[in-house]
Every structure is written in structure tokens, then in C-alpha cells.
Image 1 (cartoon, one colour):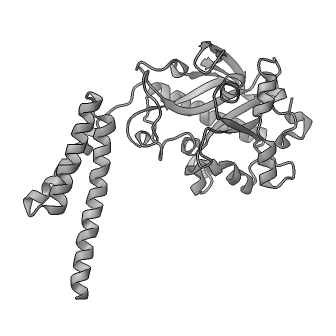
Image 2 (cartoon, one colour; image 1 turned 90 degrees about the horizontal axis):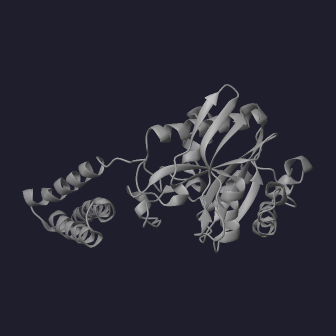
Image 3 (cartoon, helix red, strand yellow; image 1 turned 30 degrees about the vertical axis):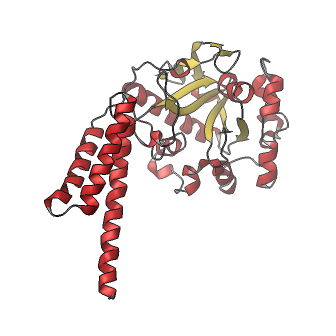
Length: 337
């Protein structure tokens, strides 16, 4: 009796594992098959129904048709190549890169838009030269747009003789595309490093998009460490210009990319909050990676929300200074210049 139960349980488990793999292949067809959207979805559903039937109810060689079909889908899917030359939406329309000349680093296609609304703006793509030796620190902006479990980090490098320079690792969407969390697991989007003026990349989220919040923290990094992290970004930026890369919501997203661009010997141990990154600032607090002003984390986070300060500062020339006033991470006056 017990042995019969084990056999039945084993068959069910094998069937279930197969269904999960087939479900992944269905998603690949659903999102990435280069056909009309309706026809693509029909093909995906038919594939799932046939493959599951063969796998769970087929006998002998008929059953093997299911893994054979799934392997064919996987082989096709892995041949899909990312590109830097698609019909992009305008806010990710240009590819940034950097030229290195000793201490000087010149960035091309730095985004610096003039916004009237989220969708109405005048594009400006700047060229900016900064000096590595003038980096004084790194700030981390954590952007929430709905769920408290997911967020978007924006890294802002500070200079003693130049405005901040921000890096935002994002999905590079084509015209007509919108973000899909499930689609992000597949090959829907390329990965892009947006290099931007701080007022652009912060203000569009606080002042023009609805329902988004930004919390701002100062990282505990020495100037030397900050310069090392800056060069990690420069290296990754130039690698993406030379060879496009797929975004993946699990393995190559806005947070995991910050970790993997760093040398393996310097990375912090893996933490589940790297993936569920809405808790990323809490992780940084516990690791002692951010300035706290001596506050417990809930109070620090509450007082690090900069939306109202950003709305008040708006187009002010000292936007960078104004959004840091009264934020605990910048209680030292030299951090809120």
C-alpha cells in the first residue's frame, strides 16, 4: 500500500516538474515569438496544452514528444540576440558611454530633459566631463512606484567641482512597449544604464509621475571606495555600448546588476533583499552601509522621503542642495551642499 502511494506520488512529482518546465516554454512563446500578438498567444496556449497532454498522459515514445518540443523552444529562445538599435522610446533613446583620459572621464548622451509633464518634455542629451579625483561620495535614491516590496535604486555620485552624475539601470523599452514583471523574466527588454543629471532622473519621479516616492541616503564610502564604484559603472556602461545585454527581472535587473558589476572578491554576501529590493534600504541600514544620523531605521526612512522637498525645489538651480536639507543622512552640513 505504502509503496503504491510512493509510486503515485513520484509520478505526480515528475508530472508537476514537467508542467513547470513546459509553462516556462509557453511563456517564452507568449512573450518572445516574433508573430502578431494574438497569433503568438494562440501558439503558446496550444503548445502548452499539447505538451502537457503528452507529458502527463502519453505513453512510451509519445510522452517523449513533450521534452522534445520544450527543448526546441529553449534552443530557439537562446538564439535571440539583444540589440542597441531598435525603435526606442525617447527617454532611453540614446546609448551612453564614457571616454577615459587619465583623471578626466567624458560621458556622452547624459540625459538632461526639460519636463513639463511626464510625457511632455524637451529632450537634451549632454556631454559632460568629470574628474575621478574630485568624487567625494555616493548617494542612493530608492524609488517606489506602488508595491512596498519592489523598488528602483538610483546611484548619484557627488563631485567637489561639478554637479552630481546619476546612474539608473533600467529596462530599455521600444515604442509601444510597457513594463511587465512576468515579461521581464523573458527576452522582452534590453538592459540600459541611463546616465543622467540628478534633477532629471529624480525630479521626473517626484514631481511628474503619479504615485512614486523617493527616499535619499548617503552611502558610507570613502572617496577612494566611491571612485572604485564609479569605475565599476564606467566599465559596465562601456561594455553595454559595445555589446547589448538582455534585462532579466531575476538575474539582471536594476539591483542585481549593481552587485554583479563589482569584482567578486568585493561583493557582499547574497541577501534575499537584493531580489525583493523594496527592503534594500533596510538591508543597507543593517549592514552599516548608509549614514543614519543616529536614528532607528523606521524614523530614518520616514525622514528620508524627499518628494515634498523636490516639488518645492523644482527648477531651482540648487535643486541638489535643497532636496538634501533636513534629511538625516546629510545632517553633516558638508553632505548637503
